[in-house]
Length: 442
Length: 119
Image (cartoon, rainbow over all chains, first blue to last red; front, top):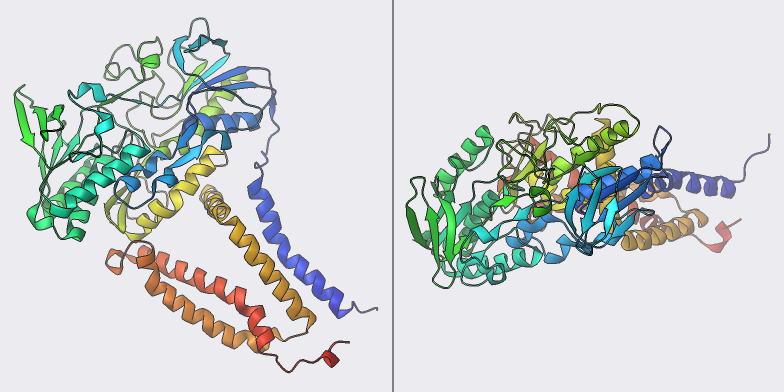
């Protein structure tokens, strides 16, 4: 038997050893092949919004439908990684890590109308844009996100964030960076800090808490904790909507010397005079001076949804104009060709990126089932996740469902323990996971 | 669990994409060195022990350095999962260094190779 020459055998071994790497790279660099063939259709699908939800749904629909006419409508050119805003606002990340381009994530073959929808007519199955385009649809996916209602705080000026001790992590990447600048200035000398929480549903309900924990840690690092006082003013009777987490946070704050007051709604602010005006439960006004304030705006659905037939008409969600979807199927309760994904949904919980990660595949599946003439057949459990930073270097990985049950993804995770693992997840792994969701891979 | 594995793979891929140019350059250097090492018939096994020791040293350094490099500290290791995370990360660094320098060490460990060894 002829022996294979040594050199040829070695070359073959070298090549063979590379095969797993190359094949793995090919698998991950291309769209994952579906076990089932793409469904042939000429349905017109309009997606309002190009945040995480809108783009994730677009990528999945593009892959699973052959021939569908898919249009994303959003004027926003920049794509922002909003879960990173608290990291920018507390000096952990640079601003560039939360700024990307929407164009990099839109799938090929999907039309992008760079405009804003100003009205929806679900009876006629049309949307109208600011630029007066009337676009018809067979299916509508609402992914508009929330409206930050800074207007409800008299005297508030988003452009003034960063000055006179004013911070607010929500408004934009630049506002997050300006908030960090304000925090740095404050921690140099210390003083009185007011952290706020409104009474409305919020996207990332953990953000006000993360800002509070990190402010306290930055004061400790700066050596000015001793001459500082942090007071958290909640418009509610708690600081977090999941009872066991609420109790854990309050216990930590008690140990850290952070005071809490309840049923105080921020209604006004004197930026130059550094005074915050709160309304108490009994209607009385309380004015609190501050050296540093973190303003969390009340939030609601954008006008285009709030003022449309798509919003909840009655019940607890009606005031915010949230999208009237079935909390299990995420299909609109009255207009069966409309689905909602992300923060705009009027569901009991779930205004986080992790919610979109779990719900986008369900929305796509159920939309396709309805397209085929069936009923939605997948349900969403309200999964929400909040990596709650407790100080620089540690976080709690809180995951829960509609019922407020803690639902850790891995059984080895202890959700109420501040840990290095959760910190590494937050600063190192969640953005890559987010991008994978954007691309429709997970 | 299949979903979590797929998610993990995608996370690693997206992280790698951010450093792809460095990874490609390092891979080209490593492949070139490996090819030279094979062609010169250097014994990889001769270099294994010293390369392994370097890998262990790097692992230990990484174990102590990684908390600070990741803006954390040992006081944030609150339960076994944290220590396991840190240990795996340190081993990962050590394994990469081990794999990368092995062909270099193999060549270095065989300085007596002459042109007459090539047939």
